[in-house]
Length: 525
Picture (spheres, rainbow, N blue to C red):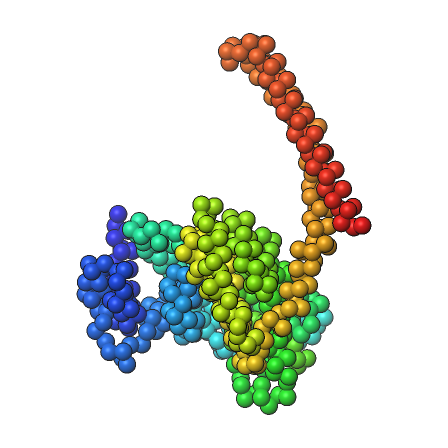
């Protein structure tokens, strides 16, 4: 009880801070907000500062500290929860904190790597960047070949785990209260959203997992043109320490250096878009924080991404869904787009598919009449998710994260080429994926995979039958010993029924396997 009251008090204090910065003023003009709630907001300080004096929600979260900065960055990915305008404002939230002391950094390195920092990193610089969870130092190490290499050393903040755990429980308290009193909060899965944030923060605070994400993406993109991932130094990496290749290059935030470099900037915009789409659609694994501050151009003119703390994953179902809806809008096949939502189970079956298609047409048709350079794929997805909310589509966090990242990536690409034609740039990547996964080749691969799965299931049936026989014998033995009041005729009938059921399943599996083989052969011909 005391703990719950403590979290409620923390919420009130946070609310007062946000209200003081003008972050809750919009609620005072919202007719959907009850008058009692507006009275509470006024008590907290909402509406007291002039528009010119308001520093905004982002500044309030900065003042509240590291956990709230992460919350703000997360909410920037959820315009369905806080509105597109506020989400756009939070995308400007900068995760910059005062660095912690060098002695604490050295102690953390020794604790994490088992040796004094001076023996591993020679030299170790002062912090070059500091954020809510960790800070980064430049250093040098001797690699396995005996070469001296420049590296970036990321060190977790002391005590950051305990601070985040406590603040996350406060966020859970707020989410549970919201779901208790609001049907819309329940539809948007506020508690599940906080759980997603919790999982994301847990992953960020184990730097071995960030290193693994970098390693996985490096493997995925090994042969990709114009994109690469920094090398990981595993011997100098632990749960609280991450050591990776230092990137000496042009930061995409440095407009003057980019202009003086002679680079093909429109081509760089294409590389940004196409790299992201390959990662999302081909690999189902993408960097979910691809803003200019995390992107560099190295000496080979390759695009290099850093800071892999936030990653997104898409299942094959999600990737098929994304490809189908993009292709549907291109072909103006709104009924197909609507059907795909129902087939994926994203929109409840009780909704009207024709009415949903009509709503999708209202999104698509205005786009078709515009110049292709004015069409934003990110804006299209944003409007799509807003419409699906009207049809009780349950929030899909992985798709919302994709949409948020696409907004950022598209903005980066257009900063290098304001006339970027998203459809022309994306077409080679999308078309290749659709041919591989949704065309004849994809159907052949699906058929072969299905046949292999059925074959493995069929091969396991002797073991399943043996286990059923043993179970039948055990039941019969228990009945005879008086443990269960069953006679021998009953147990024999059960065993016979199990055998018939197994034979029926076995036959169905074989019929399915044969059908898939016939389908595969017919497609090949």
